[in-house]
Length: 217
Image 1 (tube, rainbow, N blue to C red):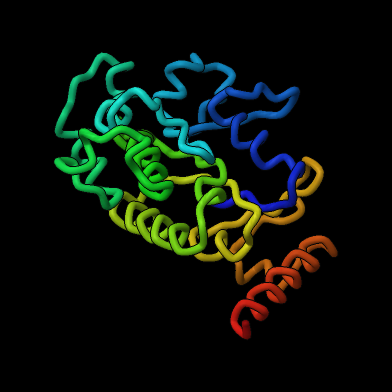
Image 2 (cartoon, rainbow, N blue to C red):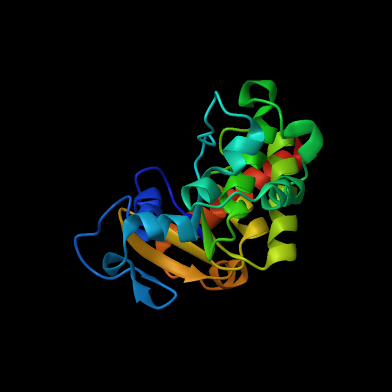
């Protein structure tokens, strides 16, 4: 599921409510049917993978050490799980595992951030504009890696993006947000065929105009 909307619409705030990095003033956030406010935030965050926009890798740790961070926090030493996670995102554990973040490209760092979120076998993954800082070519490559992970694991993923085309490519359901409220939720086809509000209609029209301009450029 993708959370889509302009800057300041509340996408990231809502995402961070799921792992209690933000505490909501009202309502309920349920993970696997259980209210997150009733769960220990540390335990909750270990069950939910989290990928930041800039990756958030520790610069003085190797790729393997970064990917194994959550496992170590859980008291687990599992080199196989680390290597499997690195391989799953399209990197070579023997080549990239010993490297430091500064030795990687931006796309590789984001792949490592995704591997770190996957290594401990989370129930779901939260992604905060994981492709926003990448150039167009690198972004497409990392999106392809993301799609492969989705296909292989069938894992629930909730991600924030301001790019409706990206949401259409990667998400089965899309939530359009504006000023802290949900304007509409549905598949891309449902949004396109039956926009619920004028804002959703404008957003769709803007995305269509941009895609057409790129095709004819």
